[in-house]
Length: 124
Image (cartoon, rainbow, N blue to C red; front, side):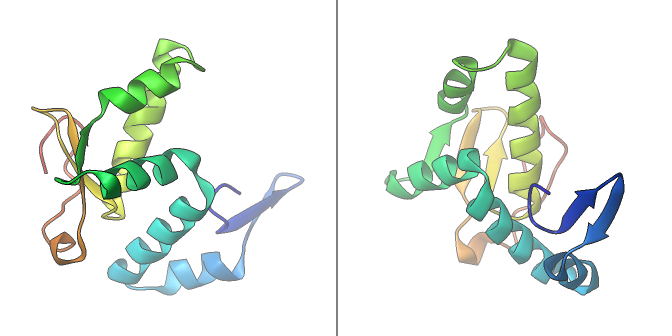
């Protein structure tokens, strides 16, 4: 499956060893595992983190990624993918998002405790 925590065969879902470890881990470890799996497998996350790392203030507007996705997907799919990326990225403390400025901010290691997964559209 997408993040490597489970496999799907003939309608049956089976946890991988990574999935079992994820299920048994504490929340901090789950977030770290999720972050590592997402960065290893999802191009959009790789692009977001790469760009955030290069910016001097470690921030960028979400519009850049909306434009990139808009070249390949319909408007409703672009919105769905961005919402999913925002939810997942904030869950695993990869980045934070300010809905007022529509900016993503790199979650620096010392910021991990301060980043909360607020509902989409609300500043963390």
